[in-house]
Structure formats: structure tokens, C-alpha cells
Amino acid sequence: MTGVIHARLLQLGREARNARVARAALRWLAQMLAIGLACFWLDNLLRLPSAARWLLLAAGVAWPAWRLWRQGLRRDVWQVRPERTARELESRCHIGDNILINACQFEAAPVRGLAAAFARRTVDAGVARARTLVPATLTEPRRLWKRPSYNPQPTG
Image 1 (cartoon, rainbow, N blue to C red):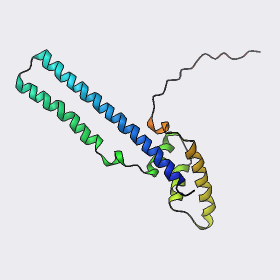
Image 2 (image 1 turned 135 degrees about the vertical axis):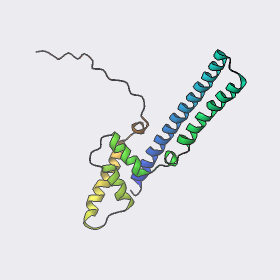
Image 3 (image 1 turned 60 degrees about the vertical axis):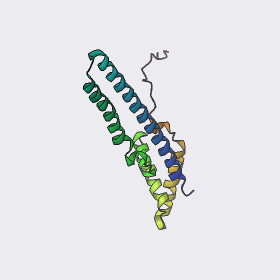
Image 4 (image 1 turned 90 degrees about the vertical axis):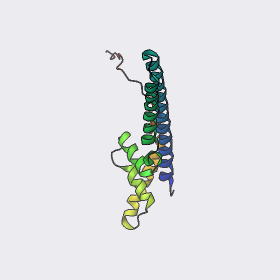
């Protein structure tokens, strides 16, 4: 069972990363299109001179390029570590006893001696917990707001 937790956490982390990158790319594309439309609209509405058009074009290209450089090319966006994924899952799923991060650490560096039984139980519990987790936990899909519905209490 060596590497089971690491493999599952890496898989979940990669899927979460891909969803975050896709969401950021779509957001960037939407902003780029909105800026382009705003530039065309301002140019058409105000009948801008050529120099102002060039400044508007430079601003319309520089701002999204700066955002892409700042957000898309960071190292931590692309790097996936099982420990970080475990910590993120524990905080989002309200796993109180740090079972995933402990299992990840015990699996990376096996414990010998008296603590080996505790480490084995922790790794087994972590494997069981990791298998039940779904990637949607980290990708933050849209959730419908649950409104309280009318639920009449049975009488009698």
C-alpha cells in the first residue's frame, strides 16, 4: 500500500489545479473580450483621435498581459504537492483529526517501533478516507442554494 495516499492526493490535486487553471483562463479571456469591447465602444462613442486610440489599445493589451504574467505564470499555480492537497481537503471537508496529512506523512516516512501500529492504523484510515473523496470537493462547482422547504410535521 505504499504510495496509495500520495497517488490519490496527487490525482485530486492535479484535477483541482486543472479546474483552477481553466477557470482562470476563462476569466482572463472574458476580461480580455470585455476590455476589447469597451475600447471599441469608447472609440466609437467619443470619436477618439489617433493618439488616444493608440493609448487605449496599449492599455487594453497591457492590462490583460500583466494579469496573465502575474497569475498564470506563478510557480505555485502549477506545482501540486500531496501535503498541500491533504491540508486543503481537510479544511474544506471539515476533517477534524488531520487524518489525511498524518497518513501522508506516515506513508512518506514509515515509522518503526512502538508507533508503527498507530502509523499503520492512521495510514489505513487515511486510505479509506481518501478513496471516498471526490474531485469536486476541490474544484468548487456551483452549488444550488438550499432553501428550507415546507415540511409539515405528521400529526397524531
